[in-house]
Amino acid sequence: MEYYSLNQYLRDTFGEKVYKIALDGGFTCPNRDGKIGVGGCIFCAGDGSGAFAGSRALSVTEQIENGKALVEKKMGKATGKPRKYIAYFQNFTGTYAPVERLRELYEKALAPDEIVALSIATRPDCISEEILDLLTELNQRKPVWIELGLQTIHKDTAEYIRRGYDLPVYESAVKQLKDRNITVITHMILGLPGETKEMMVETARYIGEAGSDGIKLQLLHVLKGTDLALDYEKGLFEVLPMEEYVQIVVECLAVLPERMVIHRLTGDGDKKQLLAPLWSADKKRVLNRLTKEIREYTR
Image (cartoon, rainbow, N blue to C red):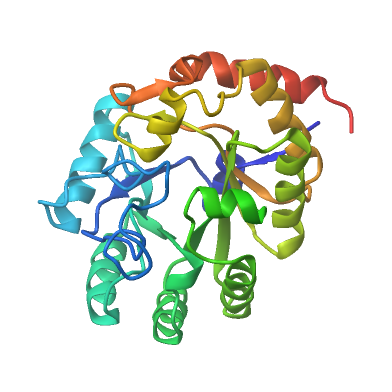
């Protein structure tokens, strides 16, 4: 089985490898500030799922420069033309602020010539008409991607993780964004407590049919200091073993549209905060196993 990877999509679109720079825009979340809740989603750590984002003490411009320097350090000095980057507002809810503030942040992120796209992680219940207008305007200059944290389509699970919105809210957001020709990427988590393999595959199939352009498949990480960690330490659920996770990923890929962009097959967590599953800390080993199983799978 083959799938359309993010790396291949970026090469097809921009003609070369593109690097992502994770930014902290100083956002919070309606699930934290009291608008709909105060504890956040049950799995969310204090960094708002942005362990690798820049420092909010720095401006967006400074964070981009620091991100570029990290890429240069890791990959070596670019020769010839400059590298290309995606500015990624990663943590908390990236559209949860007054539109004037959002414009300031997004415009600064898009300003450098080497930034070729803007990606914003957010919630489907935090996209107003004003924000849609702003995103549409910016999308005329450079591609804008909106990443929606769906995680699951199953009501009981959504209530357990304290997602804070119902499925029709996601459906409406996808339609509104697609009507504006804005790229939609959907996050789903594999291994949520109480979900079977069949339930997870059902969520993947739904995302593929709902109109999302891309998907991020994320293994459930149990991180220190989260409410999920309390339930894990009480023995209320077990995390997925690697072999089972790999098989579920393969079966999810099999029900997705062939040209859907697969942005992620697993995920990184802060190793200092990771309680379980510890096997996920060896990302290279996991990706190698995934690659092997995907190649051997027959639809």
